Image (cartoon, rainbow, N blue to C red; front, side, top):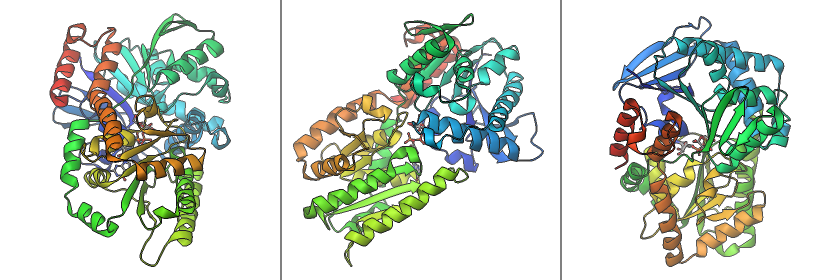
Length: 478
Ligand code: GDG
């Protein structure tokens, strides 16, 4: 029987550490209905990495994973995916470290994954590949004789054509994307950048949404990812009464809470955020001792040099802010570099007066949507959102700022602190409606309808397995 096969770099196999994964696992939670398969890297490094995937079945879903060797991991994951592609797509050319051997390792891992996956594919299966680690997968799957519908979704930004050219293998990267039937991006801007890049560097023909190249046609769409809003809100309501939330509240002594929650990543604009906060305290002394900023920044990718340097810089900045402004009974900035449980974070969001989301560049940013979903509509907090997060295309009623200007962050924090309840409710009402309409389930439905070849999202346009999936998504999002 035809099934959905999701492919991603990390596979959150139930009851393993990888099951704690971030944005993607949350977004795909509803898509993995019984009968589907999730295929990819196990997250384990093993020198005797087998070529045949290990299979784990849970609630009718098959998790099929391969281990990587240390060398695979260094070249594919650390070297090329996170050392070259991530900085390229996040507009940080100075951090891009391209090495031919890393690129060769990246291709080799994609080829190995494609060979293993090809053995699991049955005619009619629909294959949905996620993110920048796996761009060449379709080319290798096609070479292995796989003729199924193949879709790709990029969770991070895509770069403008002139910028893409800084990647020494730009043409190959663009060409690899044209092996998919559907290429999905978080925003129309990123989709347009890909079409422009394909036209400019591949001489591809662009016809509306379609890119035609070397006899292939790829439909290039924008499909903004969302969150599972209603369960997140329910969780936040419960978590706001948890012991942790009570402790946080009592430690605030009535002060306003500003909160940031991010992976410790240079794309998230944390240094600018800390500087913006310092400027708020310096320029608006009326807020001294009236606000506490809690930043949770779980360490991430510590084997990439740029991340270790960022961690050191943030330690220095946090020390500086607290050294300058603290009183013996008030610490302005609480800075944690370890992850907190999801059901604790949602409660903290609900308590907070300000959500601070200031990435320099971000595909979407789910934290912005989670913060909105977690608010009490009668007395909501204010979202401060970078215009360079994909989410800013939708969440226009946030206080939208340019994070490159720390004074703009400071001004927005001040505005949020003095904003009256009517304005807070009006802004939040509009944001909430968008977050509850553009859910993870809606995103998956829309994307899979496009992958199936239809133009709409009605169940009638879907094949039997996708009809089943759509029905289950409707149930889950109801
Ligand atoms: C990529 C793209 C795109 C964060 N810290 C903790 C924690 N989190 C959770 C958040 C949120 C998720 O992780 C982060 O999602 P983001 O969207 O903010 O960012 P990325 O991880 O960079 O994700 C991004 C996303 O893919 C989806 O397409 O939006 O643009 O870069 O859910 O709440 N969760 C827990 N503890 C933490 O300390 N439990």
